[in-house]
Amino acid sequence: MAYSYTNFVTELKERLQKKSDTKLITDTRAGAWINWSIKDIVYNNPGLRDVDKYDKHTWKCATNQYEYDLNDFVEYPVAHLLKLKYIDKSNSNYYTIEPYVGGLDQFDADYPYPLDLGVGIPSYYVRRGNSVELLRAPGSSEAGSAIWVHYSYLPKDISGTGTAVLTNFDECIIANAIVAALRTMGKKNESQEQKAFADLMIHERVEAEQDWDDIDQVADNGP
Image (tube, rainbow, N blue to C red; front, top):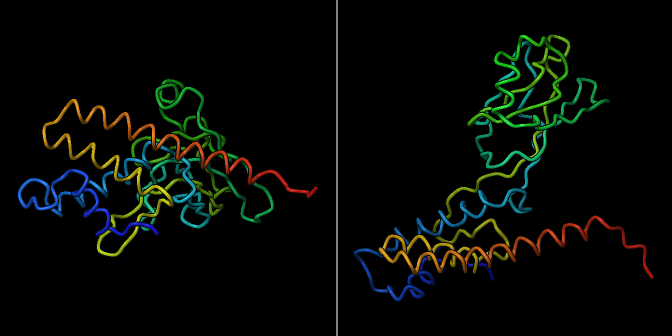
């Protein structure tokens, strides 16, 4: 059975042997470490299935607009972009918008002002902070066409009886939260050892998920 927020807090304080601490290791602080731990796992592991989102409605192309705001995704904030697609207005053709080779620095060097290239169907994108820039910028012919966004979202904080969105990650979440707790307690060496332990545990859990995702793509045609 998955841990609730309350279970997480109780378990974390017990493992720290601070169950009765009301000064440093408070319930509120322990809860903050749990929520930090969940987000930290998501940030460091793009593509986790439990935070997978494929948005087909939020972004529409606008004439001469090459910047699109990731803050538009309010209910499910973007942690990592995985794939962008341009879908024409008839929904009959789509084009994958590829990450720009060389990243943001190369993009800036090659195209100081993207509109100088003209307009058309976007072929490439870069992420700049909380915005995405397209190359080319859509023109009037592309205006109103959808941009489908495949991404990992950042989960909201949990509380009370709420459970983590990450399935079968409870032990990873606790192990990672202990890292933050030990740092706060000034136990530098112990926190480093704990981080190595937590990272290995998370890596093994993520690797197992990826293995099953690969298996799920293979058709089972029977014996």
